[in-house]
Amino acid sequence: MYYRKFLALAVALVIAISMVGLASAKSKNDSESLQSIEPLNLAVLIQDDLVPQVGSELGVTREFIRSLPKGSQVMVGYITSGSLQVRQSFTTDLDKAARSLRIPIGSTTVSPFNPYVEVIEALKKFKNEGTNANAILLISDGLDTSRGFDSTAAGYTLDISRAIDEANKRRVAVFSFYAPSVGLTSRSRLAASYGQSSLNRLANETGGRAFFQGTTGFVTFDSYFDRLRDQLSRQYARAR
Image (cartoon, rainbow, N blue to C red; front, side, top):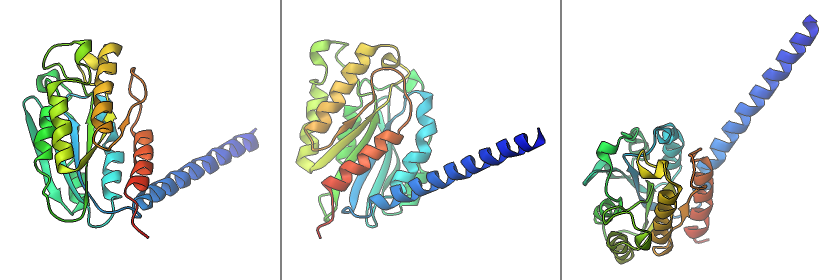
């Protein structure tokens, strides 16, 4: 009886050690995977009324920022009601940028009518100098209700078009992660699909890519970051 308990504990310990080893190896591989790309000027923009689960994804988001190649510059900003709160202006200190991330407020009191006005504001902070490629990582529900909740406007509002024009003028590719807000997109599949359509158009028409995993619930950013790393590795590979 004691032997069986000892054997079960030993097996559990081996499995636990193996899992830690795999997680450590994955983290190392993730950190190294972007070292083969050109340096980026990257603005990380987070909508401040996203569901609380987004706060638990700060760790993987910090790891991603720290994994960028040497010479990259990162800005961190939060999209709140009527403004863009810049927590960290563009800096080559990737650890400092990573540490500037905070948990989103997660309240409708800070909900923007849409995230695209603040995206335009962030785009204006990119300088037309240096050789780095320019990109935005927008973490948002993508929903634009500035002119009502109308299916004919999904993905084709004035502010989305303005954001696309500004991004293309400044040569900034927009990548996006979909996450529901505490408002409409956490309660309505239709609202979620409208938001995803908008993010998809913004990404497609600026040379980026939109990532989402269905219109219900929220799981993790792990798969988003895996796919984003793969996309960046192909899109911004260093010349050999």
